Amino acid sequence: MTAGSDFSPSEQWAEIGYQLLTAGVAYTSAFITAVILMEISRRAKDDDEPDLIVLLSTKARKATRFIRSSVAHILFLFLNILMCAFFVVRTNEKSFPTWMKTIEAVAALIFGIQLTANFAASYTKVNFMYRNFTTITNIIGVSSAVYSVSNDFFLGLQFVRAINALHHFEKAKLPFNISRSTRELWNLAFTVIAFVFVFAGAIFIFESLGDPPGIIYDSTEWTVYNAFYFMIVTFSTVGLL
Image (cartoon, rainbow, N blue to C red; front, side):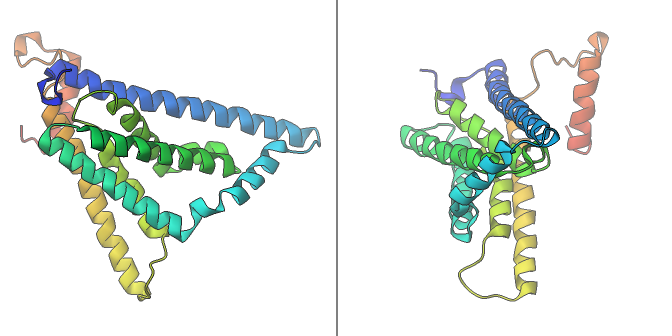
């Protein structure tokens, strides 16, 4: 099998595209499901019939109470940090050994169960899908893991898990007492670290991929595609190429 570092630039762009496509399909499927369930719930209310969707959500909320506990938030915090660490190791070593694939696959399964449980327990499932940004980053992380464990490509999208780590850090109750001002300072520091990591990861991915296929520097063959690309490059790098 081809080593991750041996992928050509076009193959690398394709691999990242497949990961994003997998995430997009998963998100769209879940969003459509949410819309259908909310429509069923609305019709039940209009017909003065028992709202089975709300009843099921209530039962799911009770059954999955542990997922929203402080202990669970701490566990998810460390698991998300571990996936971010894997991203750093993978990109530094330009490889993805079997033991890391196994751990990432197990983590993806756990995160998938978490997503499903929170979706089932949500009373407003559509809002859960598009107002909760951590839902989107979680789906991207799970989809990237599911796709990347099947090959040796070393670039992934697990850096977005820093956002989920921040979410769980803010929700978790620490096992020791600290003042409110100290906690707010810690939250601020973690927020800065998380967003720096996400933007650094995104820049690393695009810098590693290089220019997309079809981008050319010949001014005689300038296209709107080129113009959009270089506009984004200019804005994201303050004009430094």
